[in-house]
Length: 116
Image 1: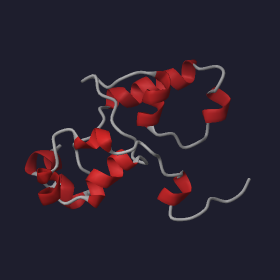
Image 2 (image 1 turned 120 degrees about the horizontal axis):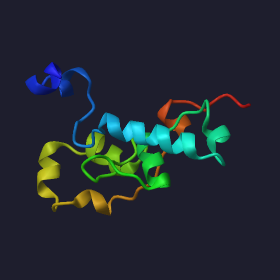
Image 3 (image 1 turned 120 degrees about the vertical axis):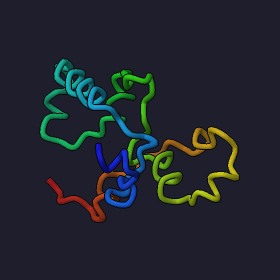
Image 4 (image 1 turned 90 degrees about the horizontal axis):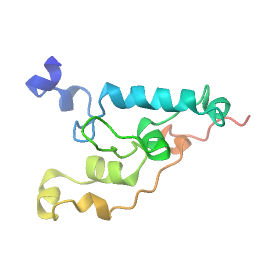
């Protein structure tokens, strides 16, 4: 919390807080997956993105939002592809016009995963 309050978060961690998720969103994801008898076995032991689970199971964070997936162009372009000067020139809510396409996990990990 000290890093957030002092403004050191962006310098030390590099992830913006604009789309931060509360711990409650993660908890809701765990509960929804645990109660999903149909898909529990498929999801168990795999990587899951909480924002994507929120979309799938239709739950929201405590403020009513569903943050974009960290794999989504809707997250990646504004976060890493646009500087602040460019963002200021764009209309409000410009992010909704960015496609919500998601990169495969292997692209995010910088390499094709091993074959099973």
